[in-house]
Image 1 (cartoon, one colour):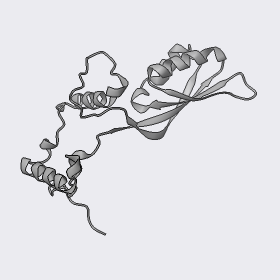
Image 2 (tube, helix red, strand yellow):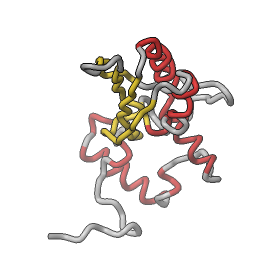
Image 3 (tube, one colour):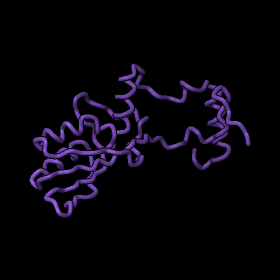
Image 4 (cartoon, helix red, strand yellow):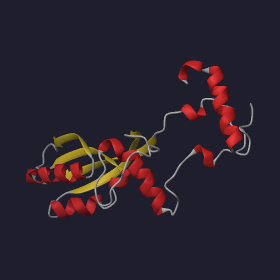
Length: 170
């Protein structure tokens, strides 16, 4: 078994510059218990504002309660229960558990996307918005480039190796 290379060594993958950029997001599954049926529409409203997707809406047998199950991005789950209780007058409550990972739509490195403050980004620009907001919150620059991590000679060498191996891609 070989030991993985350490960071100062060159990366042996010539196709590194051609890798598709993506950003994973964790999704949780909140189970929302609603005693009366008249609160279900308020739950749908809260979930849609937080980019949630309802997966099941079933009555609890033998009771007047409903159970609403959904997928909700973890980044949108902060303050979700407070918002839920506010819109249902305290009648609904939830229990959220991690469910799976999904890919945020869009390219996080696309510099052509213009993000306006206090406006929600369109769905196809979410990856860029998440990355920029996270980097700003941590006090980092918005720019992400492989030139920061590799010296110029290495970038030229990787591009040449990729051109030699895959001439149809260039």
